[in-house]
Each structure stands twice: as structure tokens, then as C-alpha cells.
Length: 208
Image (cartoon, rainbow, N blue to C red; front, side):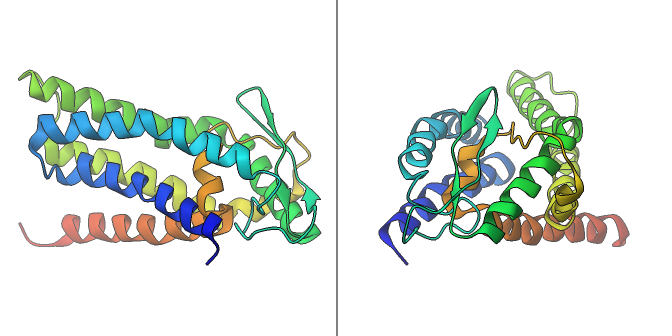
């Protein structure tokens, strides 16, 4: 593994660390929530510059270091053009297909990913103050299930973006996909999402 790929992998580990803090709360509710929020908001100030530094050096799709100039595969992200490159025409096409699929599902991403995160954090903060509107176990399920549905679906459905003609856009934090490369990140999504869905099904079916 190259130094760049190792650095990206280490930066990616902050994401599961935040999830452990939010869902497992190893430091208790206030400490875990506070540290998780600090890491979540601070992460972009490290990951975004990492992405920008390596846009011309790594394949945005597979994360491999480029041996030459690569193939341009630009997409928009929150009104900014990300001048991504790929190691081959095939990976450039896959990147564009993925970005078009994400753009087409922008509302779904908000409803199934961003909104559950906001609700979970709001409920946790209110719980600290003694006014939570969901028990923590219920809040965890309401956090994990819609996110799992969204990321598992995306991990399987992204090739459909090849049939779309809309502008490719990744309006969720694009730097998170750059750390491992989109392809590896989708496999992480698929594995974790299926595990969360299986866990939810097991909890729903097991005798109380």
C-alpha cells in the first residue's frame, strides 16, 4: 500500500470512530457525543485538504496512485467543481455514473442519511438535558436503519447512473469518498449497511 493510500485509510478511520462514539457511547452520553461532534466537524478540515492535494495524483474511483496524468472525471460538489481524475476511462465512466446517481437521489440522501443524523444528535442533546423525545435504543434504530437502506441501495444501484444524462454531482461531503476511493467506500457501505439491517431484523424477530 502506498503512503498516500495509507494516509487516506487512516483519515477514513475517523468516520467509524465517530459512529462508535455516537452509537456505543464508550465515554458516556455527554462525553461521547461531544467528542463525536468535535471529530465530525473537524474531520473535513483535514480530509478536504487531503483530497485537494491528491486530486491529480490518485484515481478518485479506486484510490490507486496515478502513474501518469490520468483521465479527467470532474463533478460538482456544493457549487464547487471537483477536478477528479481516474486511472482509466472505465474508472472515469464509473465515477461519473456514481455522481449522476447521487445527484438523482439528492432528496433521498437527505431524508435517509442527513435527516436521521440531525434527529439523532438533537435527541441525544435533549436527552442530556433530560428532555429526549426518543429512548436511546429507539433513536439508535431510527439512525441506523434508514442510513443502512440508503447506503446499501446506493452500493448496488449506482451503475444505473450510466443511463442518466444529468450533471454529475456529489453534494454529500465528497472528501469522504476520496480517502479510500469510491469503489472501496461503497464496499464498506455495503458490508456495514447489511450488518445493520441484519441486526435490526434479528432484534425485531427474536423473542422478547
